[in-house]
Image (tube, rainbow, N blue to C red; front, side, top):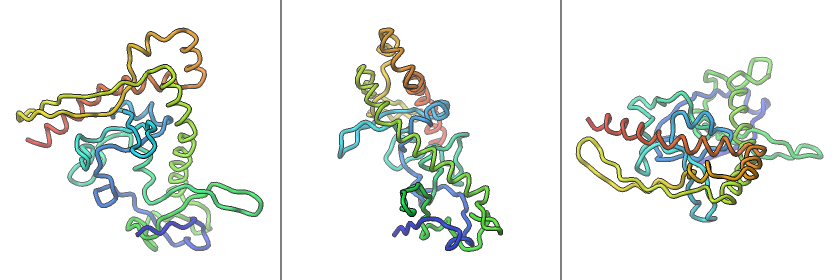
Length: 238
């Protein structure tokens, strides 16, 4: 059971955090949500797709990590992430960002799950320095949390813009593996590159000014990374 508490030096000065990845931390999953401010880096290594939230029906951007629900092809047998860029949702580990009332205002603060095995007393690297200031490790965690928060503010406006110009199309694939297996894979939605390139000037200007034009191209270009996933899966099956 998770036990999130606002992180502060008075209560948590002796805590340390060891960055780890693996199935026990929920990382063995076929896809993970990312934010728009991750697209430029993520598209170099992952397919970026959109999937509909089962409860709200809203489109959410994800990077594809595997072809099965609990398959992350980028984690090797030693639970080492095999890419240069790790999605922020994975990178944040046992931390989250939340609002805390402080005097007359609410402020964003970092929360830590004290029941997570990566958080230990007197472990290294420490979250706080001896003088009570934030360690480099904690500063990096806060940077990740803040980046996710800032990215979330772009999420709905970006999706609304893509839907306004009917840029999303369904991706259904027939995947042939080297050992002879063929399967159908409903990947989600991508940006329709022909529609994107055929946009009128007014639409292009609007998307460019909002910063969403480059993101649309990031998504469309990233589809080529599906072949990388197929190659990794084939290699693992040998």
